[in-house]
Amino acid sequence: MFQTLAERLNKTIRNLRGQGRLTPDNIQETLREVRAALLEADVALPVAREFIEKVKVRAIGQEVMQSLTPGQALIKIFHDELCDSMSDVNQEINLNTTPPAIILMAGLQGSGKTTSTAKLARWLKESMKKSVMVVSTDIYRPAAIDQLQILAKEVDVHFFPSHAKQQPVDIAREAIKAAKLQFIDVVIIDTAGRLHIDEEMMAEIKQIHAATQPIETFFVVDSMTGQDAANTAKVFNNTLPLTGVILTKTDGDARGGAALSIRAITGKPIKFIGIGEKTQALSPFYPDRIASRILDMGDILSLVEAAEKHVDRDKAEKLANKLKKGKGFNLQDFLDQMLQMENMGGISKLLDKLPGMTDMPGKLKNTINDSMFVKKIAIIRSMTMRERRHPDLIKNSQKRRIAMGSGTSIQEVNRLLKEFDQMQKMMKKFTKGGGLMNIMKQFKGKMPMGLGG
Image (cartoon, rainbow, N blue to C red; front, side, top):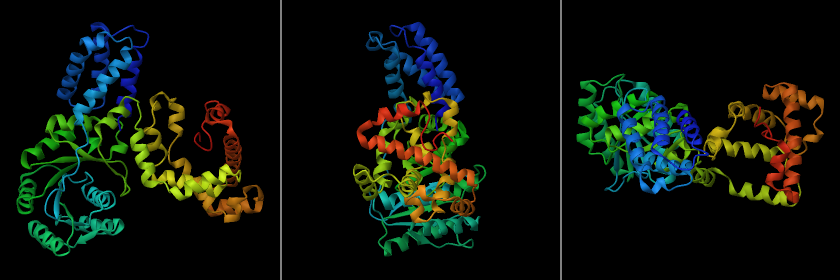
C-alpha cells in the first residue's frame, strides 16, 4: 500500500535538495507535485485540497522559513499532516462493557467481511487473550455460513451455527444468549452483504444493530476501490453509528487513496488493516507508522513487533550460539530462517517496513518477492536431514531424487547449493569479525542468497 504515493512524494522532496531554505516559490512548486501525487493515489479531491492547504499554511510559517534543511522540514510537516488525516494515533478496539462485548461487521459483498471476522477473532484471541464466538446472519448465502464455520475451526474460536430458514435478528440474539451461558468474552456478528447499497440491506442491518446493541460496529471495505471506499463508508455511516473501519486487501493496493480519504469523509478511524489472505494477516492501524512508510522513513516498530510475535527465540538463540562456536550454517538453519520470515509476512512485507526502500532500483525491487523462496523451501524439504546438514556430500543421484521430490530441475538444485555455499562463506566471515558492512561490500550491490533471483 502507498507505493505509488511514496515514490512520487519522495521524488518531489528530493527536488528540494541543494536549496537553502523553503520559500513561497519552491513550496508552491512542491505542493503542485504533491497534489498530483495524491490524486494519482486516488485520494478524494476535497481531501487532497484540504491536505495541501494545511501543509501550505504550516510550510510558510516562521518556524520553517528559518530551516536550512527544507527537505527535512517538509518531511516533518507531511508526516504530521498525514497522521492527522488518518487519525492521530491508533484507535484501540473498545471492549469496555459487560461480557460478551458485541462486534457487528457491516459491508458490501466481496469486501472481505467473513474473512475479516475470522481474522479479528484470531487477533482478539491471540493479542488480547479473549474467548471469542463468531456467528453468521447471512441467510442469503449458505456458503458464507459454511465459510465462517471452516475459518472458526482454523483459528480455534467458538462458532454458533445458523441456517437459511432463520431470521437474521433471531440468529444474532440466540448467539448472544449462548455466549452468555458459555461465559464468552466477545461475539462477532458477520452480516449479509450486497453487491450494492439497497434499502432492504440497510433496514436489516439497522434491525440487527438495534437488537444487539454492539459496542463496536465496523465497516469492512476493500481498499482497492480507492475513494469509492470512503464514499460507501459515508453512506453506511449515515445509516449505522459506525465506530471504525477495517480496510481489507491493502497488500494488493499500491495507491492508498482509501486510507487517506476515509477518516476525512466519514470522521471514523481506520482501526484495522488486512495485509494478506492468511488469518493472521490483520494488523491494528497505526497512522504514524503508515505516515513514516509513505515518507520512506520505514516502520521499524512494526518490524520489531512482528519479530517478537513470530520469531522462535529458542531457535534464534541456538543458531547464534552455533555460529559463535564456528559450527557453521547449514541448509536446515536456512530453511528455519525462511519459514520464520514467511510467518512474519514474507520478504516483500519485511522490506516494505525498512527505511529507504523507495530508492532501491526498480529492477532489483521487482526481483524480490516471496515466490523466490517457494522452490528453495521445496528443494530443502525434499532432502534428508543428513543432506541438509552436510550439503557438500550430495551426489548427482541424490540431486535427481531431490529435484523429482520438489518438482524442480537438477539445475535449480545446483543453483541452490551454489548460492548456499556463498552464504556459508559469508556467515564464516561474519563470525570472524568481518562485520556486516564488510560483508555487504562483498556483494557490491547484489542481494545475497536468492534475494536477487
